[in-house]
Image 1: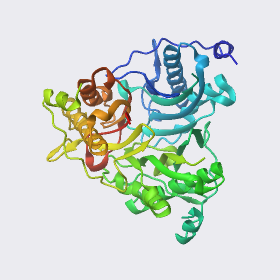
Image 2 (image 1 turned 180 degrees about the vertical axis):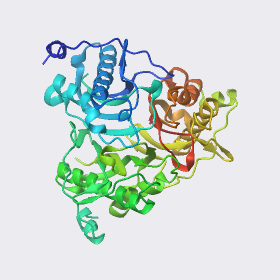
Image 3 (image 1 turned 30 degrees about the vertical axis):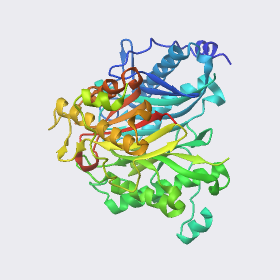
Image 4 (image 1 turned 60 degrees about the horizontal axis):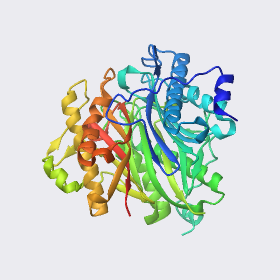
Length: 152
Length: 152
Length: 152
């Protein structure tokens, strides 16, 4: 199914590609794999910040994870020129800025995984790890890096 | 050497494949590489939880890392149908739920690496990073993700 | 450009290859990709330790990230025999041992990324994530793992 039609059905728009906030580029490619630099839980004026389990709620953090994935998809589209060249996500690594006693990291990162399943269907299935970290850049609540497989 | 004979010599049995506790699948494959989602330090009724250096000991955490690896091997066997199709582990990333002043993350993850060396001999050698994280799902003590190379 | 001439211009020398402090090897290769185990912020008698944002400054941490990269390059040279066989860095994952309210992880890991750009020019561009972790082995301030592409 066409990725853009599906995005429209989901009522979603890809954000602007975020400018890298450091000396890196958002994507590198080796063969048909693309390695995507970690993207954070913000877009335009919408920032999801703070430690989940302390001042940020699970629901806010899930929205943050969805923002991370929208940013990753925006990077992919900017790089590939056409989001339909995405074959599938291979692997996510989700970092959750969490209080030391927080235990629901998988539920947070589901906010990103759900979007992949909604957008790509069966092809959206992926491997994943979700961990709690002590701090993140700009005090964002989530950061997610990813490996995707693309078509030629 | 046959992986099952070796497991038996080591007095080990593979656990049931853990159900993913989130919207992901335990493995994806690209060519001859398999990406394994992070597996945690529990199996059946045996749970290794808590922060090492605070309420959990180094020895307990090492047993936890071994449980992570047994779970990863169970996933591999379930996916491949035959553990002898494992060519070698390529890379581990070990997350240790640790007190802020804990400094022995490599010793913890050795509990997983030792099992790979015991099971696969020279072919069990692998690259690895071991870090201390602020929190993990369900308060488990360790989580390990991995990339393995397999034969056709 | 010759990597050794460029190192000399930069006034840098590769350190001794660090001995792995655990049951792993510093590098594994799959095809033309090499996976490098995490290297820490120390070299010989120079150790950068402590949590940045608490007792360690941003500038010290950046120097620590540079040490991590020098160690990674030393591992590459030891493995490849010739640093000119490096085609390019593909992906870094930078772990910063940080106070819970520290927010400048990208600026820390720039200490490593800058060295890649200085050494390899355009070919030194890479994808990257930079996160704050709760603790690291031996209380080092930074640890960086990497994937590089090499020539035959």
